[in-house]
Length: 137
Image 1 (cartoon, rainbow, N blue to C red):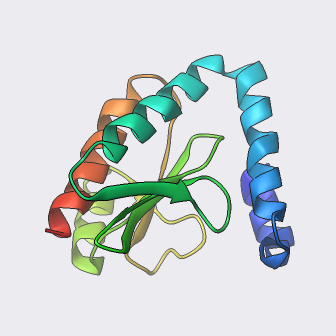
Image 2 (image 1 turned 90 degrees about the horizontal axis):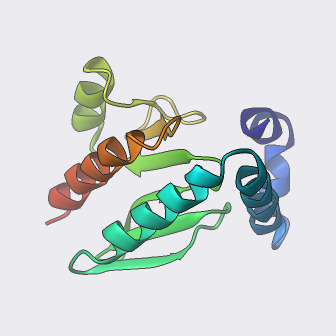
Image 3 (image 1 turned 45 degrees about the vertical axis):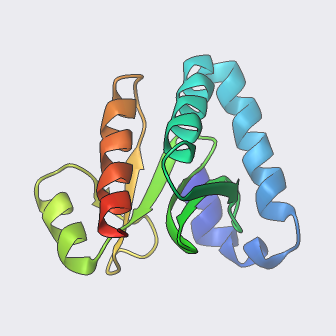
């Protein structure tokens, strides 16, 4: 559903507050269908947010965003989609090693997308965020 909405109704992301309302809808669906996911997202937010110099805030297109030194490391959406930024070379290496995938919209950029499918995926998400964090030092 998320990819469908982004693909066909992506122009609506510029409507004030609409991405945040959509993310709230996704959070509600996650609470009902995958309550463990909400806990995992909270674990990610708490862990990454505790790292030195990382700030946590709302992402402009919905979700929770993490920044270091004013630059975005990545963000998570309430349905378990995690988008993380790397250099293009590091992104290519991570995708070729099947540690993450190309971004669901900007597939030729440094952005990647990882889909959380199970509680065990949180360890990989934290590792991916840590790689982005270290690259920003």
